[in-house]
Image (cartoon, rainbow, N blue to C red; front, side, top):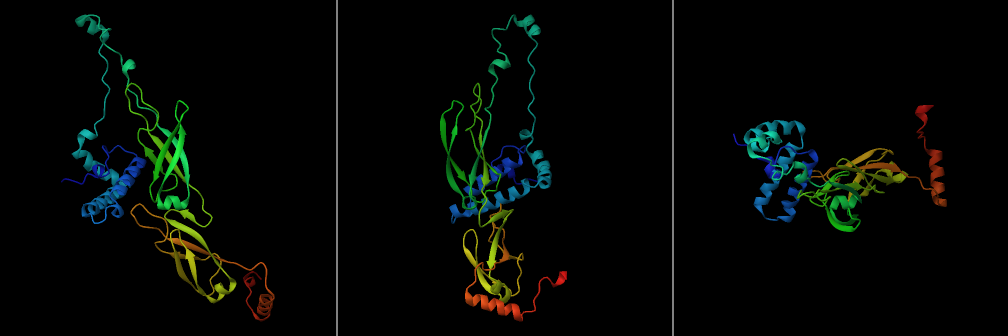
Length: 293
C-alpha cells in the first residue's frame, strides 16, 4: 500500500529530523500555501490540508514512529547509514604501485567541514508574535563587521521557537556549506494579556455595583473587542471564557480568552457616594466573614 509521503509534503529529505526541524518545515509550507495568500486556488486548499495532516502525524512521537516504519520500508535509500571507508594500507599499495605518497592526499588535507551554526535571540511583543512581522537585526561577523538581516516572524509563533536562516552562520571549510543562523524568539510580557499555551488571560475590572447587580461589559481581546454578560453576584477571582479569542494554534484555529474578574472599590468617594455606602452599611446583612466566626 502506498502511503502519503509526509516528509515530501513538508519538503524534508529524510525521516531523521528533529522536532524543531519539523516545526520549521511546517511553518514554511503553511505560510506558502495559506488560503489568505492563495485566494480561490483549490490546489492550495488541498495542499494545506495535506500539510496540516503531515504535521499532525510527524509532531506526535507515537504517530511518527508508526508512520516511519511504513515510510522507511518504501524509502530504504533515504534511511541507509553512511559508513566511512577505511584508507587502503599504504604498505600494500607501495608493493604493487610503488610510492604513492605524492599522488594520494590524506583526508585531513581535504576534509570538507560544514560551518558552525550561530544562535541569537530577539524579543517580540505579543502583538508582533500574533500578527507576524519583519524585523531587521544586526550581528557581528567573525571578522568583526556588522551584517544586517531581515527576519520574517511568522504569525502565531510561540515563545522559545526558533527561526532558521540557512547558510547565514559561520563559513564552511574546504568547500563545505556555511552553517545556519538560528534566531530564538522571546515574547515579551504584556501589561494587558498573559499567554498560556493557546489561551490568553486578561483582567475584567468591575465596580461593586456591577458585580452585585450584573451587567454587560466590554472586554478587549488581542485583535478586537467583545461584549459579555456578567451575572449578578459574580465574585473576584471568577473567570469568564470567551471561545476563539485567544492565541493562534498550529492548525489555524485559536484558543480562548480567559477574563478573570476583579471587583474594584473607589479609592476616593464623592459625598453622595459616601452617603449611599453608609446607608448600605446600615441596612445590609451581608457579612463575607461570617463563615469564619
